[in-house]
Image 1: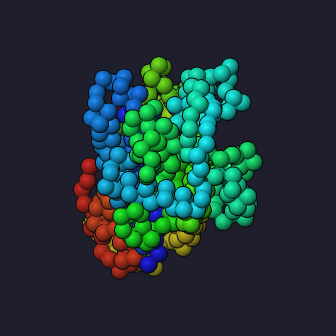
Image 2: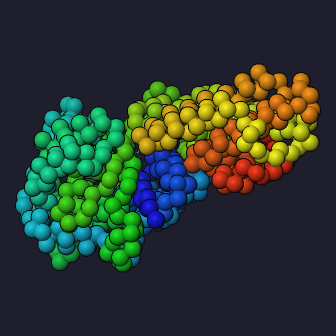
Length: 494
Ligand code: MSP
C-alpha cells in the first residue's frame, strides 16, 4: 500500500496559537486527508518545540515554572488540533524524554560517527527570536527586523556541524529536483542561500541554557534547539525507539512558512545526509499572513486567536476561508470582514443554497427520492464534473489549494445556473428531463461533496446526509437517494 507522510513545523510554546499557526496546520491537514482518500496509508505529525532561550525567557516573564508554562501552552496547541478538526496521528513535544529524546541522541551519534561534529569557538550575534546566529548584513541599524530586537554578542565554545561538506551535494539535489521545493521561487532562494552557507554551531554551553537536551557524553553542552527540533520529524514516527519510522520515512511533504526555509532546506537535509538517511521528497513553503494589512503583533493588538474564530464562525468556514482566500504559496491578508463576505457569498449563497434548493426540489418534484441512474446525467454536466475534478487534482498536486477550491466553486456555480436554466419547478412531473435535471444536479453536488472532504470534512458529511448518501462515491450509481430534512448548512450572517 502506498504511504503518505506529512508534517507541520512544531510550534514554539512562547505564546498561544495564532492564525498563522492555524494556516500551516490546515494546509498539512488538507494534504493528509486528500491522500488518505486516495487510499494511501497516511501519517500526519504536528507538535510543539519547547526548548531554547526564547521559551525560557517567555516562561520567566510569565512568572510560572518553565515546566508548567510550556505544558499549558502546548495544551493550547493540542486544543487547536481539536478545534481545527485536524487529522494528525500524533502530537509530539520536544520535552518528551521518552518519545523525542532517544531520536535526538541517535541522530547526534550518527552525525558524530560520520565525523561531522567538531569543537570550536564561536563568536557572533545570536538572535533569540530566530534561535540562530545572524549576520551583521541581515540587520537594520544593528536590529533584527523580524523580531525588532538587538541580537546578543556571544563568544563561546560550541560543537560545530560540518554543514559546508554538504553544500555541493545539496545544490545538485535541488537543481536536479530530487527534493522538490515548492514554489520554485523558494528553490531559487535556497540555491542562493547555499552559496553562503558555513558550518553551524550545533550546541550551546549548558551554563547559559538551562532547558534543553544535554549533548551525549558532554554535560557542559546542550544540543542546539534547531537540531533538537528538526529531529522531531523522525522521532515522532519512532526513530530512536523502534523501526516503525522506516515505514513512513522519507516524508512526502514537509509544510512550513517562508521564515524557516533555511533550517528545513539546508540544515535539516544536511543532517539527514550526514546520518545516512533519505531526504524528504518535497518541501512546501507558504507565505505569511497579515491581519487587516498589518503585521500581526501584540503591540498593535491584532493577533487573531484561531480557537475563538472557530467558536464564532464554525470550523469549516474558518478552514474554507484560509484555504480559499490566501494563495497557498504567497503572502496573504486575513480580515474578519472578508471572512464574513466569503461566508455569506460562497458558503451561504452558493453552496448552502444549492444544497437546500436541490433537496427541496427533489422533495417536491420527485417525492423526495432519486434512483441514481447514469443515463439521467446530462453529458455536458458530466464532462464539467470530470474537467473540474482534473483541475482540482492538478491544483493539489502543485500545492495550489486555493485553486483547488476555486474549481469546486466553479462547479457549484455551474449547478446553480443549470437549475435556473432548466427550471425543474416548471416541468411535468413524469417528464424524463425533470429526472435528468434533478439527477444531474444531485450528481454535481455529491461530486463536489467528495472534493470538499479534505477541506471541509463536516460539511461534506452533512451534504451526504442531506441526500441519504454514504460518502463512498464509488457506490452512487444504482443507489436510491432519499432526501432528509436538515438545518441550513450555513445560516446567513448579519
Ligand atoms: N519552532 C519553529 C519550527 C521548528 S520546526 C522543526 C517555529 N515555530 S513558530 O511557532 O514560530 O512557527 C511555526 C509555523 O508558523 C511556521 O511555519 C511559521 O512560518 C508559521 N507562522 C508564524 N507566523 C505566521 C504568519 N503570520 N503567517 C503564516 N504563518 C506563520 O518556527
